[in-house]
Amino acid sequence: MRILVTGGAGYIGSHTCVLLLEAGHEVVIVDDFSNSKPEAVRRIGELAGRGAELAEVDLLDRASLDDAVAEAGPEAVVHFAGLKAVGESVAQPLRYYRTNVAGTLNLLEALAPTGCRTVVFSSSATVYGPEPQLPLKEDAPTSATNPYGWSKFMIEQILADLHAADDSWAIATLRYFNPVGAHPSGRIGEDPQGIPNNLLPFVSQVAVGRREKLSVFGDDYDTPDGTGVRDYLHVVDLAAGHLAALHRLVEVGGHHVWNLGTGQGRSVFEVIAAFERATGVPIPYEVTDRRPGDIAASYADPTKANQELGWTADHTLDAICADAWRWQSQNPEGYPD
Ligand code: NAD
Ligand code: WQD
Image (tube, rainbow, N blue to C red):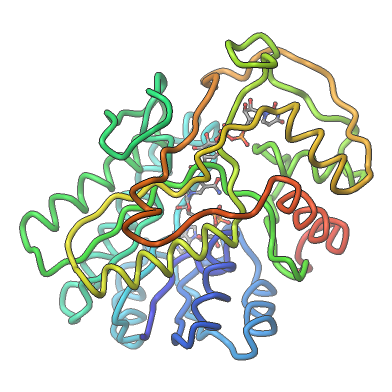
């Protein structure tokens, strides 16, 4: 198939593009490089043995997006592009709603005149809100606590309404838990700009000497060791989930919501121990106050995706840490400009 991948130069998008190309699909990346580098696109081609096409376009530039979509002539779209930093979304709500919600509307409207009606969308477990019933099933109530989360909530609703109005749209909303790790080659991985918001990138930067020590945000949660518990899944497993969802959508059409997670919760202390085990590098840390807005625990019930997509997230936490470390140690400053 010919597949348009918005945000294909980013962390999850780049890993998905490699798998799409390896599976024989043609890939057209639409990215404005606001949070990624062209070098990622080059390395996607290097890993897959053949390249993706690239349209350097901002989803908010409607005229250029229309042209890029028409020129690409896609049969399906995987839509990653958007802003994702929770704290930044609280400070800049309009920018987040415009990029995420209006960017998605632009994309869907650009697709409308083409024959393409198949969309896989990057949602987040953050839509399960502040008091999740664990393990989280897809029919659990949804809400949000910050503009980033609300933007995902709104886009999910827009996609559901679109399918309800016209069931020729085939839509998969994928709710990711905590994507981590890197491609086993060490050539592509997560390259956060500035101070990392997320645990694994921060731990990796401590290990490589870019940060002095990790702050553990609270050890007084109601969890087995008091630290926050999350469902960490390898980014290559997550990328494979997109291929499985896409293939299923093409077979059966419809509107689907699938959790992509391992089903296993791991604490911050477990992650530190796994990273030290996998790399032999000690991670200095101090326990600090809780981070505002954090919840004690979140993990998936991935049964629906396991059964309907024949997909599971198999990589262990130790394998995740080894791959994260290979990427970080081989690219201590991330991608070159
Ligand atoms: P990322 O920032 O690495 O990738 C997003 C890509 O989109 C970047 O390459 C960026 O340059 C591009 N982009 C941003 N705004 C754009 C615009 N207006 N026009 C064109 N391109 C634009 O993020 P990621 O971690 O790969 O996340 C991908 C998607 O998955 C996002 O929608 C994110 O909200 C969602 N998600 C991520 C996580 C996570 O923890 N990483 C968890 C759940 C959901
Ligand atoms: C994991 C655990 C922290 C950093 C966020 C978004 C969510 C989704 C994924 C996009 C928590 C603890 C973290 C640190 C720490 N993104 N921690 N020290 O909070 O589950 O989810 O990213 O959709 O929307 O909210 O992930 O990696 O930030 O935190 O102790 O320096 O690590 O308190 O328990 P989170 P995270």
